Length: 218
Length: 242
Image (tube, rainbow over all chains, first blue to last red; front, side, top):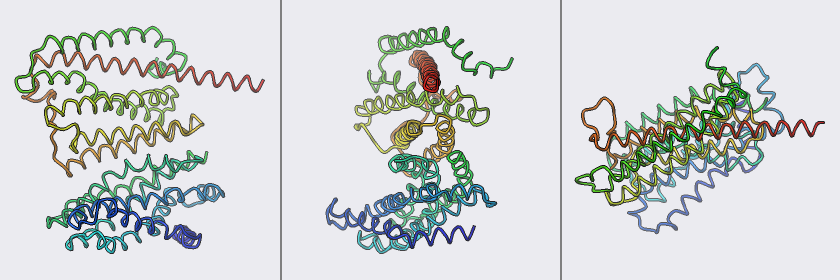
């Protein structure tokens, strides 16, 4: 399992572009928002938690179809399915690799971009914490979506249609935690609920993902 | 003989042929009687005036929008466990009907909301969860359309339906955390003191019965169409081979 994780990470770093692309996309979306809504810092700091969360969600979405597509095309997914490693574990490792290559950099970069949107100073810690807890769930849900559409030629658009509604609870708790942090309220309830979602996703979705992969490899 | 016998496609076609016109007739009768009764023979509400009559479309449509998804979930489970093709086709047939009911509920809700709350749309938990339900329906239908092999499509969509149900329920209660809304709570529960007055309740009941029957009739009809379409495809494939 560790070998698979390391292989995916190496592939992501070395295969050119894929690794930093999500991060660059995140940066561009955040930079574009002030052009859209105007440079008023009061407005920006009010919408900053939501913008940062939505932007990181879109950035995570961008690289989802790479999770299985290449492995499916060159046949290594079929090898994985027949290997002694349970496919559930492989699915979880894939999600973890996706998180390390997109979710983790996003989490680290988000406070810096919060500065651009003049996020309230109290909220930085909660932004970091909520992304740290929430982005693994995004990766796991996205891996499930990627497994659903792996056999399709033009699955990219369908993938976003399938995955985005599933992101609703995570986004909602994440942005709410940051907003409460910014308003000086106690965000621990939202953070805990989001932790619950992440834990639930990692406990259950690998099974659904593996089932879907087996169907697609039939 | 068990009830599963009726799921055999040939038998299914046999027993639905006589049942279908009756279901349609009863559905039409209930809807027409319920709507006419509701629209013309009930008093206006003392605060809402005659806008209260939107309830006869809004509530049954909203009810069926959710029940259609539950029916799809049950049909998907039956497909996964027992692999009855009719079950998968019925789930597929129910989805567009459910979408239309969701849209009717959203639109009538907006029309009702404008005079009552002063807005067509608010980010209220119930309204929002219906919008999310609508998106789930769209994704489900899109996945059915995207996959060519019917068995693979049935398998994948049923997994999506199950996972989607969990997330739909999660979203339903997550939005409560986010915003307390304008929409009133349940006013048709069977176990509560405070419900709608009987004058509104009886025609509403007829309307709900009509919408349920209409849903059943539409799903049966669409399932029959799907079975026929599949037969035609099989015949064509055979003709090509010969």
